[in-house]
Length: 360
Image 1 (cartoon, rainbow, N blue to C red):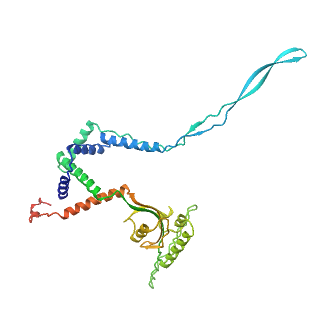
Image 2: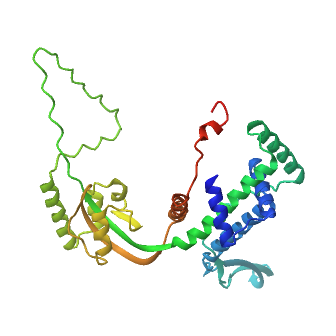
Image 3: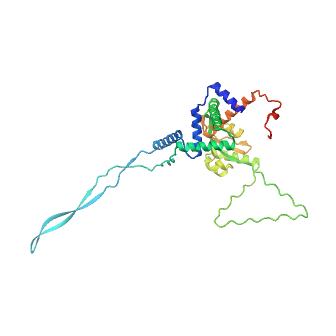
């Protein structure tokens, strides 16, 4: 309740309002979506998205290229009448002459196949009859579960819309859609502690029997053996050795696939993609954001082990992912709201317990 009052007060100060039409549309959207349907505005938005997707696909369609088919050869039989002399007289003789006709080659455009976007299912727009039925069902549900009237429920919708609008404004003031980011790859070498020494069995106690592993069926791949222990000094020595091999020209991706203890990136040649500040442990981040592009770092120690880092790209205003942006915008509003709550002078009655309904 107090949060709603703070939101309403701030929204009024900023001139942010919610109209009755917006409340009615939100209610209509909610009922339609609950029935697996859409409203007219939602159907329009879906159609626009489909057109944009088609336009994007069309923009990437390759230009047709002309190909020359092989020349076609046609053999035509032509009857020619000649005269020949025989002992019995003159008799006309028919001979056949083969005439070869070569068709002229023409350029026939052929288009390489392109991936066709999967068509979205056609949305079904809610009718007035279905909306009226859904509205009646909603009213009955509200009355049975919470005792709310439809007008009270619309007030809840209004408060939510007002909160969303205020959050949008505050987030736009405090959250940037871009950030300084780097695209880097690394090789991680973990320090491998030795297995703990088994506890000696006290005299007179029968030790647990050693289980014999069940042989794998024929054709099953042999499991990768567990790497042996490697202390800090040995891990650092290997990191320095690999760095020197990289400086000598060996391929980073190949060495990452063979040696890196980070399974998430090793399969991709150590590539970590783009990341901004605050997403990596401090020693790694400090090195990555200060390292010149294309230079191999000295071994960087973190809680995970030793890293060899190479920065591939750097961008002072790299677009944030939508997921990251949504999280930051939500967090920015919550931070603002908590600051407002902390500054409120809330007066609570001394006999608050006595004012509560009986049974609570």
